[in-house]
Length: 380
Ligand SMILES: Cc1ncc(COP(=O)(O)O)c(C=O)c1O
Image 1 (cartoon, rainbow, N blue to C red):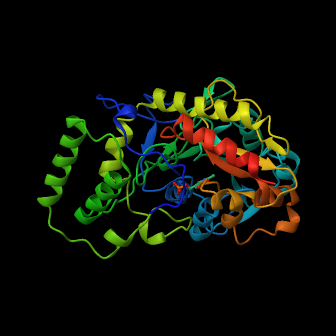
Image 2: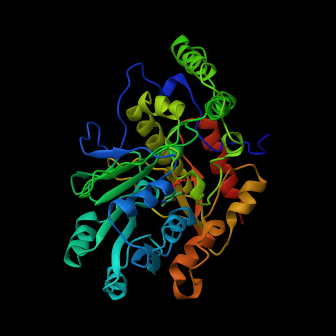
């Protein structure tokens, strides 16, 4: 049982489902390029390196403020990671990037933190000038644009992580915008036991199960499972997506069938609207609380926020106090990559310790938002 008084993540509800299946992805509806849908975005990064023909021993530039789930696949692949600076506003330090490029550097990974776009034209130009690949990390993006182009269309490859936005157990997209090879992965067949586990997880989280259509689809899937031999190994039931580690034994797992169904039937415009409206509601009130600074004091058109990032002036690890009071706030303090020397990246170090994420997901109610505002105002 959760000890939070505000729900941590979105759940499946008919309010955010559509009858007709559609494709979701970075404003890339109707994207006609090469797309693969692995189990996780971290797996997409791993496979992406091989499609880009990065060799073990090559170097990849990665921002110093990052979740280790994005770094571990690069290390596991055998490439060397070099970190570059980002400032306290999560903007890339272009000078530092250029100073770190060597003849062994093959790729640069850039993150649209929390759904807010980076200056992608400039990043793309830099990569082209230095003949290195651009990995566009859209793990925090549901949809969005930068300089008139959809996020996800700038990178030589781009990765998305759906469980941050949709009520899915797993799932990612790997878009291959500029790879010479025909990308194939020999996927493992999804085990029946795993499908049941995903279903159980969705039902446990779900509300609004009155629609016959949704139940009907579930019933069909479970029927299909019953007709398959149960060949599952132990991992089918023990695997969890609630971890920030990279597990090489799962790289041939694709996005589960149920998660694909939910993704295809998600009402993306309604989700974007709800998240934007929650962000704005919180923004208007939190900005008035003394000692609270928002990373972004305005929400640009077209941005779908993953979370709302804020800092409590002079208070480190404020998320711990918020969690004790029932708010599912987090920081990236616990997921900083092991190989990063914090003293070399003081601004990133500051962000790991001070940048607190508040939920803005579509399943929140007005009263949840009010509780968050009230609790934030009590942090001293
Ligand atoms: C910037 C970034 N990239 C990649 C990932 C990995 O996403 P996934 O959990 O789908 O593997 C994360 C996870 O939090 C992330 O924050």
